[in-house]
Image (cartoon, rainbow, N blue to C red; front, side, top):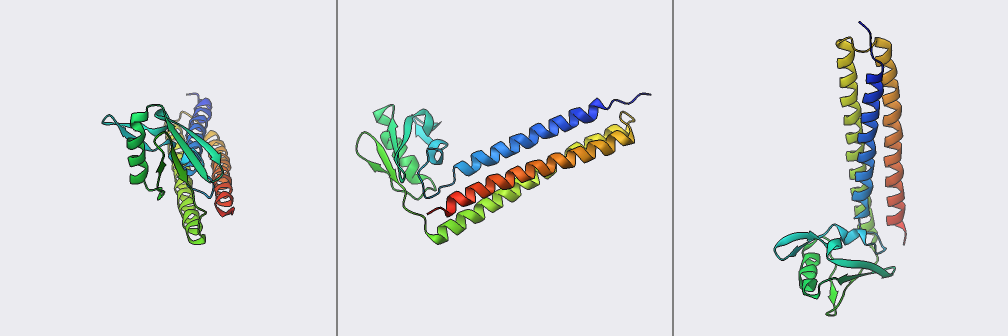
Length: 191
C-alpha cells in the first residue's frame, strides 16, 4: 500500500484558508469599533428597516467623512431619512443623529479614558476569540492528518512533517491577529 503525502499538503492548504478567513473576519469586526475618529465602517453594517425589510445602511446611502469627527450620511431616497435616523438611535453607537432634512450628521465626541480602556478590553476579548478559532482549525487539521495516518494513507513521517508545518501556520496567523489587535489598540489610544 502506498502513501499519499499530498493529503498532508491539502490539509495544510485547507487549514491556511480557514485561518486567513478568521483573520479577515477579525479585521472586519474591529473596523466597526468606534475610535476617536469617524469612519464609515462604524455604520456600514448597521441594518435599517426600509419598507419592512432589514437593509444594510451602505445600500441606502452614501457615507462620507467631511471632518475627522463627523460622519455624513446622504440617503439615495429622501423618504428613508427617518428610518436611517431610527436605526442609528436604536443602535449601540450612543450617538444622537443630527437630521437637517437632507442628510444625517453624526458627530463623534472624543473618547474618555474610561471608554478607551473599555474598548481595548473588547479588542483583547475578540483577539482571544480569534486565537481560539485558529487553534481549533489547527486541532481539526491535526485530527484529519492523524486519521489519514491511522488509515495508512500517509506515513508517520508525513504526519510529523504535517504537524510541524501546521504549527508554523498557527504561529504565523496568531502573530497576524496580534498585529491587527495592536494596530487597533494604538488607534483607540490616539487622542
